[in-house]
Length: 563
DNA sequence: GCCGTTTTCGGCCCGACTGTTTTCAGTCG
Ligand SMILES: Nc1nc2c(ncn2[C@H]2C[C@H](O)[C@@H](COP(=O)(O)OP(=O)(O)OP(=O)(O)O)O2)c(=O)[nH]1
Ligand SMILES: [Mg+2]
Ligand SMILES: [Mg+2]
Ligand SMILES: [Zn+2]
Image (cartoon, rainbow, N blue to C red; front, side, top):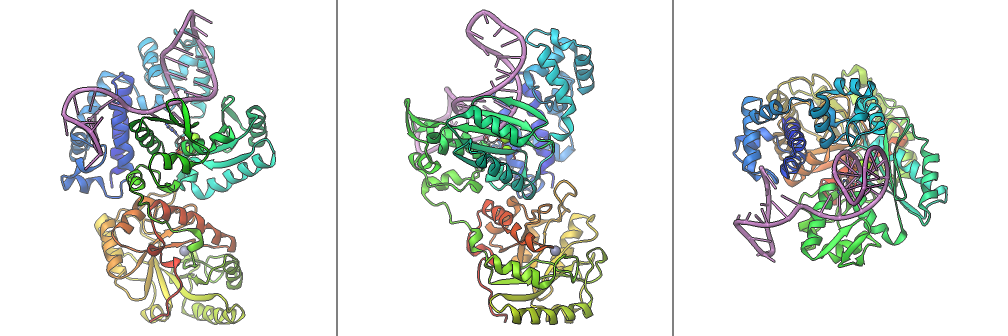
């Protein structure tokens, strides 16, 4: 899958165009890049099918560049741009405070081509003498260089959300704000998060900002005013706080939730209707006609309310205009969890501790799916141990009759597509989760065959963490996802949305594609501790981003009697 | 360079904060 590579190419082209003051084209390239990096289908396949121009925001010009890149592995157009402007645009632009205009001036006046040149010039105090620059700009640049490495680090929703909730709670507890909400990609439940965006309503923004700075105790202050404040925490995480009046809260929440492309599309709809939309409200001439709530804005634009998770400009605005936003699955719909571990393999809690937690969540069933087989690193069970586990499950079941405990196992898919479990044991389970834990580095075809062959076995309920990626640690393995979806459908196997913070696998683009193909999904936590069962909300967020309804999710319904 | 239930040409979201400016351009959300 070369989608990210192609998106990076288009972004780089956009950067050079922007620095050379070409109007509008940069945004066209950026829009195309954004769409392509969240596409479920491999761009190579779309190209081979001759369908590049079917991708929204890709037209003749960009399609040609993509085709050339996929064919030859390089782009003559980018090469030409780089020849005309021989600088490391990507690196220079990644310095905070440096944009295309400044980068151009630095190159024209001091021949600054890369970070090294930039650092040297700043240290020699040459930058402050350029017209339009000054001492402060020079210092900002030096500071920007020291913060460089941390910038592109996106972290998992599972790690960022608790942090954001804690900040929000402290802000509310300070009594310096009336209301506070988490906004941005966190509110949209995006699986990876660039920064924490907080919105607050207050009549005294100055005091609210002071309270925020006390709570955040940041290591760097990026900006501070009456309406917003941006900081970097000691952890390196950026936090943006936006403050508005109470009557503006809905409009501000709409703005700050994004996504950016959803906002732009919505604002264009407003323009077409003769209105203006910004973070303070929806305006007709200079009169505010909506803004107290998000709902009021969508309504006045002739749309149904759009759930935050859907706001990615992927057609949700058209659906909202038709009033056909689908009902999305909710956390409350979840009846149980099929993927959990106990001390019988690499979990850290007893069966009963996990069951008690599941009961407290109101579940009607819980599947215990400890590792089975030869997976040493996960302390996988052998036949003797799983039989002992079944006895214990039976005993715990008697003590906890209100929740149904199902006997599962997580089984490794061997390199050759066989399963690391004897057929007799597989048959005697209530269900199996199969997943790849070894030999990630295989060819795409080989991996596809491996997984599809594995799905031929009986008694498989779920394909676990279907892409094998670990956020910030390991890229997904190469696999033909369309084939996996087809095989899953054929064998009535659900694809997993694994809610572990490091995994978030499937992520929403693939989950959405799978559901569109009619494939069913199982949202699981893969909990190794009782409290980890609460990770379910992250998985539900991803499912909502995939436009999943209750009917698409196998654990959003009561257990069927096993046939 | 892309796009279109008023358009195949003429638009392309809108505002806060900063630094360097005597009135605003640049960068960022
Ligand atoms: N209208 C408009 N809104 C924007 C723009 N940039 C950002 N926003 C809004 C929508 C974003 O979701 C929100 C927060 O900005 P962020 O840069 O933090 O983006 P977001 O949180 O969506 O993604 P992230 O995970 O932080 O990279 O602000 C823009 O250029 N125009
Ligand atoms: Mg954000
Ligand atoms: Mg932000
Ligand atoms: Zn597991």
